[in-house]
Length: 263
Image (cartoon, rainbow, N blue to C red; front, side, top):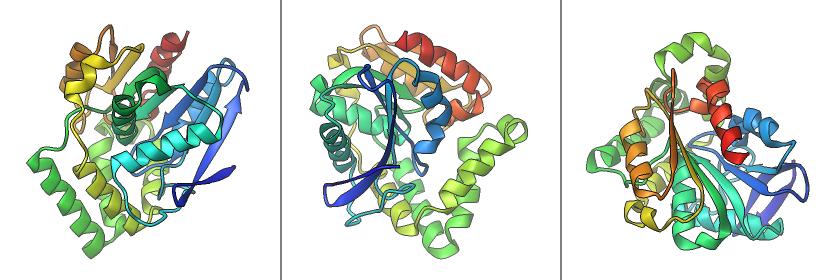
């Protein structure tokens, strides 16, 4: 897997599919890595140039100087695009990846051909959510990453997914447990500090797809509907039998909507 040095750090990425076709860039959620998108990469590789990368500190990308804000992660996205010779792309972001995409299209809308927002929301953290993130940081520092991972898994998967798709649960657990405490804590602070992009949704002019799991408690269907109501001609689909990781919990339904969107 290639790597590029940008913004005082390194990003690991994959670049596959049809070289000169319309590019699709996948941005994963917290605290995962690019491999959460493996099925979707395969889905689009016959028709598009498909790029996925590890957000700094996650997967094979080092944390760099340790300073993380969503805006800095947007800088990384645009720098990676510049390095790959891509001015504008179809951007697919899940959860944190959606936050990066929403802030990115607010800053530089001409860099987006289309937008797919998966299990994400435009609102900033409430005070209650910020307090929960502080509690998570305390858990990581005092009880370790494994305890944090055990707690986190309960919030991102629908109960049925634990029984139906144990392989996906194990995959995500391994990703979380292999992420450094410094990355987890720094990213949690960045998520708590992110801006609210709701007021800029009406300015989005590109085709937009919104996907959300019916049981998602972190970025619920109500938040997805708010985005859909504010983005012109946005298409929204609620993924059945899925919570916060709908692309892993119900990949068949998720992939059908994603493929139809890009066709």
